[in-house]
Figure 1 (cartoon, rainbow, N blue to C red):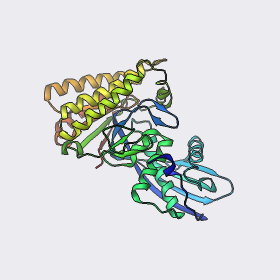
Figure 2: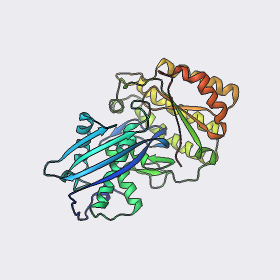
Figure 3: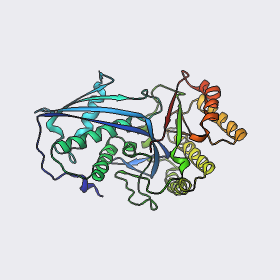
Figure 4: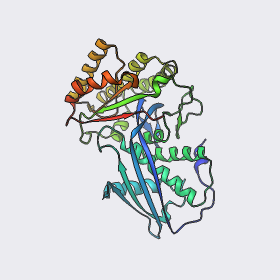
Length: 351
């Protein structure tokens, strides 16, 4: 599929008003995307787990108008800055959704997880909005297959938040061209196409909320600092290689190799931040202390407890469901103390 395939040429019948709803989960990347080109294209391929219980629910009411407007309510409270951001986003996709500026939109959105908690709300949020726009397209008369509908929703979500394109799929999703992933694309995500070892279909994800505030450096700024990064090219090449290695691991069920690679990816992401110009550090002392505890626990117990991080301080703890008992006790007794307010989020992958 190319960009032109997502430019709608079908006639629309504008309704006076209507309402659509969507729910979209967040995701956690295993191979990290860090660095991008315009318009929101990844500098390297990535793969993520889609989560089950961390999601955004969005309702969009649209009403025909002569003055395009957007009103966003988060948890029933109108958000002026979000409204401006979503209005700008909707205007930017008019090329692909021609009717978009014929309506006034009232958007109510709810997250199942706390804001600024280490769960990517932009991924689930833009994923849900993109799904809603495709539902409106159907209501106005556009005919499409289910496969095309989800591909275009992924394409549209990417233009709002890069990682959002992966949230449109259950299980594992790949975004970015990779020579060993059939149909992979920089324009949208695709479901991981190979059979996965059963151990990887029941992974748990417990998030340690080590820092619950807003990040000191936004992901947008962080991506931009990769443009002239001295190690950028090496990093992009390594991500391609690591995705090849992870693909084999996911199929053969090597849990130890999975942990080594996923943790290396997480630490590499933060190494890129610490070696950019200017440099910045998003991990906190609690992050480092918890990592050291995890390494010690794993060495002593031979359990398969691993961690990953996105661009922030909070740790995602990944482990197979069959080892949940011992690991849950360790988290409660030894790791919760590193969280800011004793808070954790319990989740699992969505298959």
